[in-house]
Image (cartoon, rainbow, N blue to C red; front, side, top):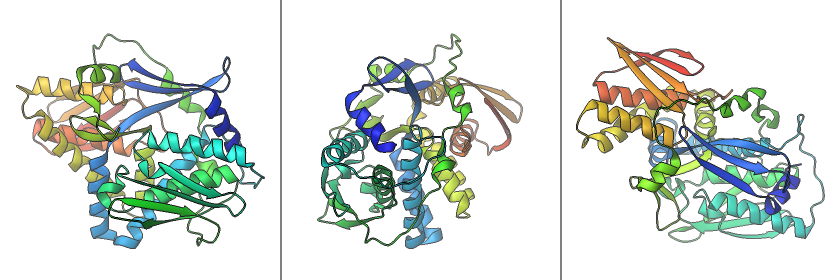
Length: 365
C-alpha cells in the first residue's frame, strides 16, 4: 500500500547519489539494512513550463489548459508512488489512524516542498470527513503562470493514493501570494488515472547500468562545487540564476504524453525546441567558439541527469549518442527536442529528428 510506503519513508533513509556524470540517483531504503530501490532523477527548467502554459492558453483557452495541467499533476503523483505499488494496484479504501495520517502528511509536505512545491508548506485536515487543506506561497511554476491546476492534480493524486480512493482538489487564492488547495469528497470528480499504466517496467533497471568511459564530463556534484547550480533564497535550485526542478525523469514525458492525448503534441515539441534554442543562445554567447559551446552543453546535460552525450556531425546530419541513456516506456519527446533546439542554435540551421534508437538520436537539416 502507498501509505505503508510513506510511513516507511518517515523512518528509513534516502540517499542522493550525485557524483556520477550523466546520472542522478535517489536511492530509497526499505529497511535500515536491506533492500532498496532506485529512482533516476533529472532537472527541468521552471521557465519552460511557464512559456508552455502561456502558449497553450492561446491555443486551447484557460479551461482546457487548466484541465490538462490537472491531469498531468495527478498522473505525476501516480507515477511517483508507482515505484511502491503492487503489480496489480487497486484503489481500496482502508481506515487510516490519526497518527499514521500525521506522519504521512508530514512526509508529503517535506517531499514536495523540497522540490519547490511550497504550496504544501502548511496543512490542516479532518480525517473523519476526509477534508484536507494545503497552503503556501511562491510555488515553483505556479508562481509564474498564476494557475495552480498542476498542484491540484499532484495533491489529489497523492492524498487519493494515501486514502485508497479518488479525491479531488480545488484551489483558492487567499491573498496576493498565498494559495490554498482544498481536497474533500464534495469536490466534483474530474479525473481518475489508470494507476497500472504508470507502473515501473522491467526495463527501468537499465537506467542504472553505468557504463564507464573516461569522457571527463561533469556531474551534478561538480556543477554544485563550481557554483553553476545553487540554492536561492527560497530554497529552490537554480542553474545560472534560472530555477530548475528535480523530479523522477518521467515528468516532462508525462507532459508530452498528455499534450499528445489532447491533440497538442506538436505544440509541446515545438515549445521544447524553441525554449532550448533561446536558453543556450542566452547562456553560451559569451563562449569563445563552437567547440567550447558544445562542451558546455554536454556538461550541462550530464550534470542535469540526462546521460553523457557525444555529438558527431557529418555534412547535414548530426548523430547524438548516449552513454548511460534514459530508458522510459513513456518515450523521450522532451529530451530529443531539447537537444534539437541546441543543434538549431549551434549550427544556425533547422534540424529535424529522422531516427530514434535506444541511446541514439539522429538529426538532419
